[in-house]
Length: 399
Image (tube, rainbow, N blue to C red; front, side, top):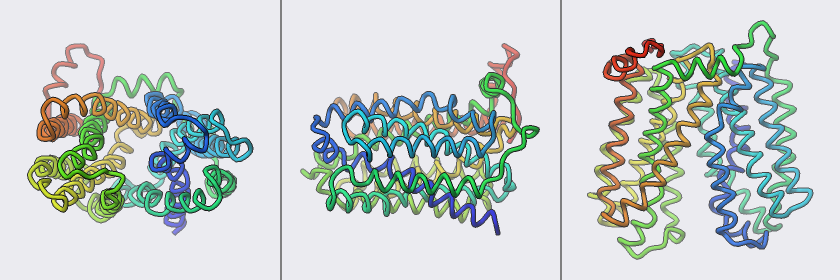
């Protein structure tokens, strides 16, 4: 019962963290006006935030070195500090600092939380448990962002930061009381050894590459679907409120499906199902997207299957390297970041030259790569192991 209560508490806490992360996108123009800068200038800050994902292992591995509680508290402390500097002195410098401190806090908090529950919840029940905490991502969009919008409309662009500072202090106190301290005898290997362990473990690298290829496929469509809808139907995505609702509902639906099915099916099988369904959704998008309703249905299917992949993948990764659990989970964040970079670099290039259908085909190809990586992780694909075995340095185990 205590763990169930903690899962719900962590869902609330992560909703607070994710609200800061997600509110930047819809209110980018509002923040730019309030700060007196161009949107382009502010977008550079968002780009820098994304770039920080490449260094997530440096921060996430702290939970392996210093304990889960330390990682959680350090993450919340950075978040609260970032929110506080804007609440105290709102300007472009403090806003930029807040965005970067918040994402660094998230890179500390998320792997520590996932590793914390990975330590305590049996693998066969871990999918349902972690799906509960992942519900915070969609709840931030459905509930947190609208609340921030209400505060901004009523009290100004900087109003959310005072509330988020107070909530950060509440989070710190709650975690301090709720999470037990990790005894020194139970702390894991140092950062150099944990990094080396991940980088020489084939299933670990395969698992990270699943995140990379799946995110690359998603980012291809994510960046282009607004332009595609505008070109196809003459609509601005900002005016297409239904598209935002589709994304939020599909995320919540994907998380719910993981909670209901992933443990029953088994993590590798659920992930195979999700990736295969995302392939079909990508192929359907250009076909059903000939009407506005069809496009929204296609986007719903694409996003719900991606969210299913994303959330099913996390419990699988918690068991690949238990001895360096938080470190590997932070490498997983880097995989997602690299995938978004790959998708972002290719999306506009392909669309401007060939249209949306080739974008969908490349998304399918990336998902196939993710399926092959899943085969590597589970030991069902042996092409890469045979090549790497020549070097005699990559370890592997079947999950």
